Length: 237
Image (cartoon, rainbow, N blue to C red; front, top):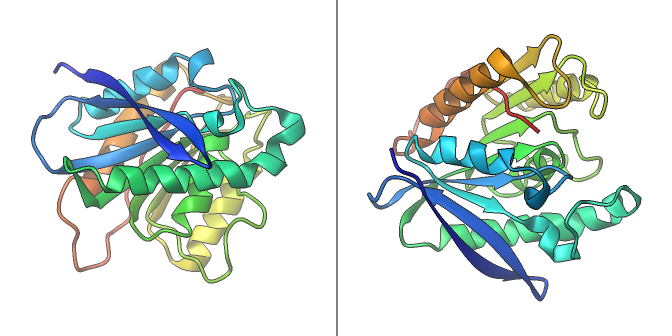
């Protein structure tokens, strides 16, 4: 299936934010996925676009948001990571509003795929906005203080490498504990021998799992009954 890629921008905090849009289906309205890259940035890692094409080929309109445009960076600086987290979160919220207003997507079927830093942002915004029906967290940490006590996350897939040297696997278990506490449908998948990113069979398995997860929670119209848990998988950094 042919996937087309276009580039648009929206405004956040007075800055123009680039969005790469990937889609294969011409049917409307369709489910949409916001993809949030890691600290290395879109321009420095072509694998984000590869992943976006794979998800788009399954029938989703994928929006790869260049949220680092908000702070004028190609790569997130560790020195300013914490002070920039809120502006980036605001940018993701603006991206969600922008995507929701598109005439060719179904605003009742929105999901987020976050990778590393992008996964932390995905957790933060999903805890505040009930429009998000599915969240995929690729080896991201739980952002301290960004999730309110009374908030509730959507169905969530947590994916992590057992040997991750950047975001230790303990973060995955911390997120799982929160999801259990909130009684949120979720699945935790730990890949033995994998680090901060997945290779070979683990990467292939991850994509299959992600598509199955999105299929369950986004492919059809919202159900009045509570969704049931399903596993999903991993991604490359």
